[in-house]
Amino acid sequence: MPPHAIPSQVIWSYSIGGLVLAVWLAATALRKDWARARGFDRLLLLGVLFYAAPLAAFGTEHFTLPDIIASLVPAWIPWPRFWTYLIGASFIAAALALVTRIRARLAASLLALTFFCFVMLMDVPAWLQDPRDRFALTLALRELSFSGGALALAAALTSDADERRRHGLATIARYFVGLPVLVFGVQQLMHGDHVPAVPLKRLTPEYVYGHAIWTYLAGVLFLLAGALLLLNRRTRDAAKWLGVTVLWLVLVVYVPIAVIQRASLEGLNYFADTLMFCGAILLLAGAMPREAARPALSTGSLQPDR
Image 1 (cartoon, rainbow, N blue to C red):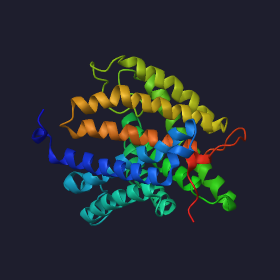
Image 2 (image 1 turned 90 degrees about the horizontal axis):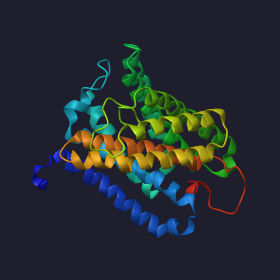
Image 3 (image 1 turned 60 degrees about the vertical axis):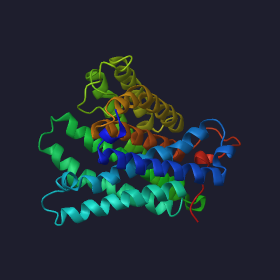
Image 4 (image 1 turned 180 degrees about the horizontal axis):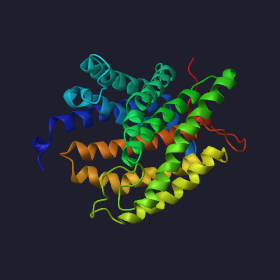
């Protein structure tokens, strides 16, 4: 398909997401984070990127699709266009703050609050209109996990001197991610024909190698990891391996969807949505305590804000 056949909305979202990727690569190289990190800590470094790039892409849609985004604002909130543009600009600015670590803790805290407001003001009321609608519940829990990922990053960037605050943020983040993971695990085992990770309405396409096996496998792993997170047992390992699982699903399920549907915002959104979910989980892993002390960089070599 020639590039001119791809809608400008899709090109803009990929371009801004790509810009965030480029900034992350430059910032990581300048700080020499990759060279200092060892083993799984290198994977944890990717958590910020996986969270921030999709966030910027979604923020771009607030400018390229303002009518659609504004229609999602509750009717009782005035000036829907204003909030559409403000949130879009804030998402892009926050994504750049996260990858450059300029006011990153503030940006992460505000993102956590923003997504929590989405849950309470839009997603939960929509779900309560029909509690049997599992997709409405999925959307609410997805936004809650995004809030948890941002909270986890805020915790990782909190100074060691403020241990009480750091522990409190990490604990809330663990529940905000662990609960959706557990519920998603149940949903995936019940509906293996749907896409894995964040179990939304789309059926897994026939061209995806392995097809339903990925959804069932993810369901089992999600149940195990979600239980460990909620029970506060081996939380760092649970989040790390869960992040690896979701990253694998992105590669084998959502990258093919994005390639086949490269001219569609649906292909972009499913790919970016799941990648951001993966980022939230990896950010949680970086905020969880190590089970055994050993010489290594903590939290994927993230350093507290000064």
